[in-house]
Image (cartoon, rainbow, N blue to C red; front, side):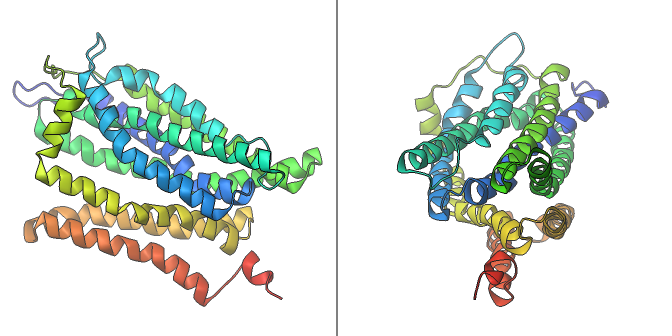
Length: 352
């Protein structure tokens, strides 16, 4: 894969990197697809509190990303700049992902229990976001260190988005239906209540996907090489902040991300809506609805990636970014509107 004298990655390294990207997205979608549902409909934390937890975490992420990026940027070790994080971070990510689906009971039992459950949920979710960022930044950043060839780097990033979409898509489709199926099996085989069976079912589902995702994620740290030597200069947090503040395009993109975060919260809320109100906690129907939603997202993502290069030749990148951001909120809003127009599931059957 070498071109001229430029150093670049091997096919084996490329394949390992793509597998690791799929693994990382497995972990991300355990949380992205299942945690809001688990909080609200398994351990019964009220929707308003779940929304507050996730909103606070999103705000903290904006600050956390900058700090964690500085830590990664200052790292120099015998393994390189990014590899140490790729070797060690998947382990705590796996542990915290599993702990996020570990509870001490159900919300509503007592005030003390409610405080404990909400505090644990908040700490685990925010801590997960912090640790995940420590692994996410090096995973994307290491591509600049794997090759001196910008064409090879861009090609690797394109494949990485596809690999991430596959890993994340499989998890999004399977995590809730499989956890519900585990719960039903435990309820019938152990003779425990349906509520406790479901709670343990989600724990087992998270455990299974977290172990697989973390193992795949960690491969990257052991198998790739950093060929591009990093600068010896280690910018401080203050220097990075000044650079960021003086970079107007970057500030605009960051502000756009913060203002656009409610769109991501809509995506999180869509999972409980589909699996509770549409699928009525039935594993088979949950899978069917997730195939419809996930299949649409999968097709949309790959269609978007396919037409993006042609659109960039015809339109300004800024215009494409703005229009696509506005348009991407419409499908998620439609999920809620369709339900209001044709209510189905537990909510509808509970109306006298």
